[in-house]
Structures are given as C-alpha cells and as structure tokens.
Amino acid sequence: MTSHWLFQLVLLAVLLAWVVGAYNRLVRLRAAIISAWEQIVAALVKRSEAMAAVVDAVREPLAAEAATLQALADADARQRTAADGVRQARARIADVSLWVSAEAGLASPASRLRALIELQPALIQESDQGPQLAAALAAWREAEPRIQFARQGFNDAVDLYNKAIHQVPTRLIASPLGFRSAGRV
View 1 (cartoon, rainbow, N blue to C red):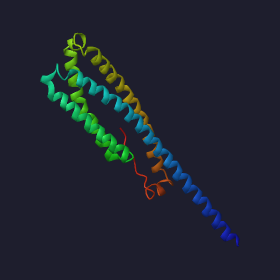
View 2 (cartoon, one colour):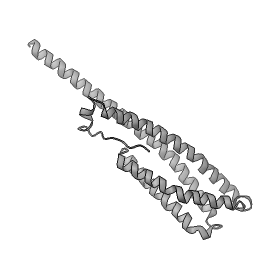
View 3 (cartoon, rainbow, N blue to C red):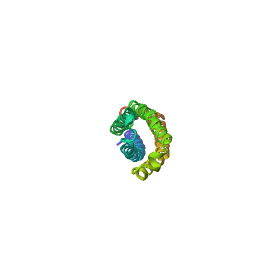
View 4 (tube, rainbow, N blue to C red):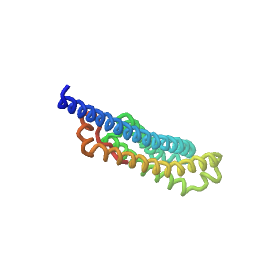
C-alpha cells in the first residue's frame, strides 16, 4: 500500500470519526430538549389537575359563569393537545408555536376565573367545598412558577441544540441526518 492510499484511509477514518461524534452530540442535545419538555409536561399536568379541581369545586356556586368554566376547560384541552404535538414532533418550531398560542389562550379564562373567585371569598370561607377549593387554588399557584422554571430549562436546551446544528462544519451533516431547528417557549 502506498503512502497516498494510507493517507486517504487515515483521512477517511478521521472524517468518519468526526461524523459519528457530531451525530452523537446532536442526538444528545436533542435528547436534552425532550427531557426538558417532559419537565414542562409534568408541571402542566399538575396545573391541569389543579384547574380541574377548581372548576369542579366552583361549578355549582358559579353556575352563571358556565361559559367561563367551559372556556377554561376547552383552552386547557387545546394546550394539552398542543403539548402532545410538541413531544411527538421533537419540538419543531411550528408545533412549539402552536403550543405557545394555546398556552396564551388559557390566560384569559384562567384570570377571569381567578378574579371571580377572589370577588367571592365566601366560596372558600363558607362553602363545604372551601378547603378543597383553597387546596386546588394553592396547587394551581404552585404550578405556575414550576412551568416558568421548566420553560427556561427547555429554552436553554433548545439554544444549545440550535447553536450546534448551525455551527460549521456540523451544519453540513445536520440537515441530511434529519436535525432541524427547535422552537423556544
């Protein structure tokens, strides 16, 4: 074997080792995004459970506000569906944007319900459901900062991943191997 062939073989081995290393790094970064998304989902589940408990506790006393309660339930269902889409699509930008939109749609009915409850302190103080309502409201309030914290962790993971797939020379293999930019929340 001539030195020319040996040089080409070594060059090919180095190139192959780099491709495998770059691929493994991108897989690891994408796995970090998925793990961070699961943290968001866990906090979302806790919030959804707390909101459902609040809605159940006030459904009868706030029967006149059935539209608000239904709007909250519908918005939460849209948010959960969009969250599942993000998980299945590995945080594609379009799916993340859909979830962000669904999450924003939850804000209005949620704040309306909270305001209605605050305007009627007797719901908590004098009702049979008062202790359950107070506990559910506390769980709901506790879930919000957890969601924000998880979102920050997700965004940090997305930033690292997006930076990696746009760096040269990794950029040359990212797209052909199916690595696409991820969306921030």
